Structures are given as C-alpha cells and as structure tokens.
Image (cartoon, rainbow, N blue to C red; front, side, top):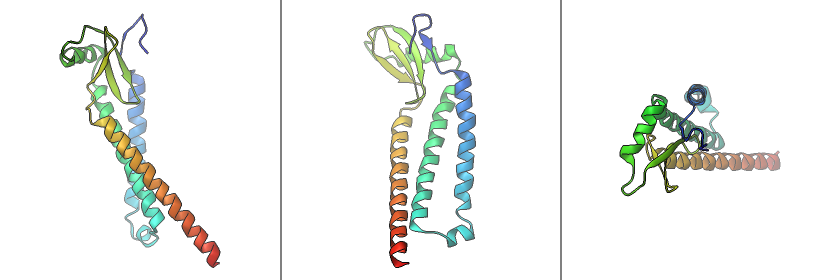
Length: 160
C-alpha cells in the first residue's frame, strides 16, 4: 500500500532475498526428490497414483522456478532504477507518475499514475499467467493422484 510519506516503495530487499534463498532451497529439494524417482527401486514401485503425484510435484517445482526467475528480475534493481523503469514504459496519454509499489502475489512492480491507473514493469508479462497455469496443473495432477489412491485402497479392501 502506498503511503503519503513514501509513495515510491518497491520490493523490500530483505524479503526478496529471503524468498530467493528459501525458494532455491525448496526447488533443490524437489529436484533431488524427483531425480530419485528415476532410480531402479522407485521405478519398480511405480503406480499410477505415484506417477500423478510426481507430475504434480514437477509442476509445482516448475512454478517455483518460474517465480524465482521473476524475483531475479527484481533483485538487482535499486530503488532509483525501479523508478526509472516506469517512465519509458508509461502508456501513451497517461498522466505523470505518482508512486511505485512492489507486489509479491502477483509478482510485479507497479507504477502508479496521477489518475489512479497503474501498469507493471520489470517482471516479464508471461510470468504471472504461466504461474497460474502451472499451479492449476499441479493441483489437477495432485487431485488425480488422490482419487487414484483412494480407488486403489477401496479395491484392495473389497478384495481382502
């Protein structure tokens, strides 16, 4: 939220850096787990529900990687550079700029104008729509995995 005392607020470096460190650690953990799924033992224990679970995790890891990619675009910009990104990207006929804010969800750097409109800069435009698509894919694959596992348990109970 823009305050009257400082309307030029980008992303807080300490939070951005923490997100990058924690996200990278989580991404490395997910990647290591997914790579372990290619071992001979893991392939031997493969079931449809586990395949869908791993697909869900892979989509979640891709989501995290893309989010971190967007954060990297913001990491190396200083406050002055963030403000300088707004002016050349200002839409035609837009009045003067009055503020700047950084949002983490959705990931964007927003330039605000005198008439109350705003526009995003720095973070590539494909990041947020792709994040939504990958999250939906992860959710869908996870749901299929849960349904297949329940179905398998129900069949095992009826047979046993």
